[in-house]
Image (cartoon, rainbow, N blue to C red; front, side, top):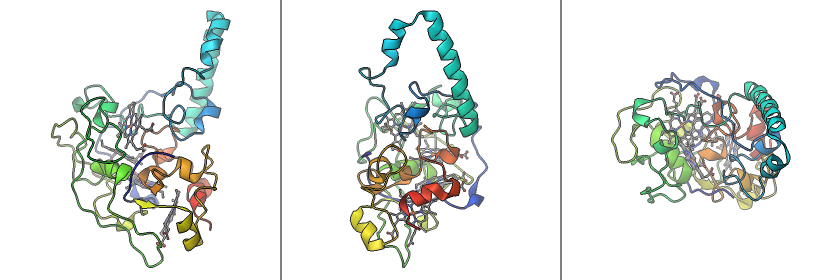
Length: 274
Ligand code: HEC
Ligand code: HEC
Ligand code: HEC
Ligand code: HEC
């Protein structure tokens, strides 16, 4: 299962929410996650479950020793061609050049990860915040509620709180590493602190909720289509979070950084039995 915590929101919907970016889109080079060919891009997380290459199983290693340099190079060129074909169908996969690549901004020190993560002195105040470096939101949120909801969303926690530390508009995008930035998000990507109009997040989605609700698939047996069950691949510490639908690193290169395509509402139907 993925690791994260609790809280808040979801949003999905309306096709009408595209905003006007305030930040110049980083232009971008296509990223190719190193081991990522088609078969390996199924898992929602980059480069294997944890996002790391496993030196013991990475079969490219053995091949290199067997092939001479020239044939290896030809294969690389072919592979690169196939990947760019894929990328043009899906959009560039990976964080490089995505809306979360701020490296072209003067304040980002030509780096990508640093705006959100740091190898040292990370903020440990939020559960499931991996080596977090961005200033955390202190806002209070109004959460989704409805007469037909069975779950009770709590205040945004875990990964959702991390997202909202830029997407609620109370913290500047360039406030990280202890520095106070000034670039506040605007436009459609701005979710705000009123989450009543967004898909609920930050609540446990388990088999008991599925059976009470009657219109949800069992998260522990439903295949997510991402290489494991809904619980394993879409929930974090068994909770619905922003990351249940989105991949902040844009690993698969699907529009709106979705975990999987929503064509035919496939994303929604992964969980909802309608
Ligand atoms: C249940 C699935 C789901 C959850 C949970 C969810 N989203 Fe989304 N989100 C979507 C879908 C689907 C879209 C694309 C909608 C479209 O293209 O009209 C989207 C679009 C977006 C956009 C792009 C808006 C635009 O028009 O440019 C942002 C930003 C976003 N979501 C942020 C978040 C944040 C932050 C959270 C958590 C607080 C979250 N989402 C939770 C499904 C979800
Ligand atoms: C460091 C600040 C920051 C954090 C943290 C952050 N985002 Fe974003 N996100 C942005 C900015 C800035 C944009 C671009 C806004 C624009 O173009 O106007 C963006 C864009 C997006 C988009 C639109 C992508 C597209 O291609 O249109 C989605 C979806 C999104 N973010 C989801 C998330 C989710 C989910 C999380 C947490 C898991 C998250 N973001 C965390 C700053 C952040
Ligand atoms: C815009 C913010 C943002 C940027 C930029 C970003 N990350 Fe993350 N990252 C997150 C969030 C939020 C999570 C935890 C929630 C999740 O997985 O959705 C996370 C989780 C992770 C994790 C642990 C879970 C996993 O997916 O493996 C690793 C490792 C990671 N990031 C590495 C990186 C690296 C390396 C970079 C730079 C190339 C990077 N991230 C850039 C926001 C970001
Ligand atoms: C990862 C699983 C998952 C995905 C993907 C997902 N949902 Fe949900 N959704 C849930 C859960 C769990 C609830 C809480 C249901 C409850 O407690 O009654 C929920 C709640 C809702 C609700 C509120 C129900 C109410 O009674 O008020 C709506 C509407 C909804 N989802 C629509 C969507 C749409 C549309 C999509 C696709 C864009 C989507 N969901 C994607 C899991 C998911």
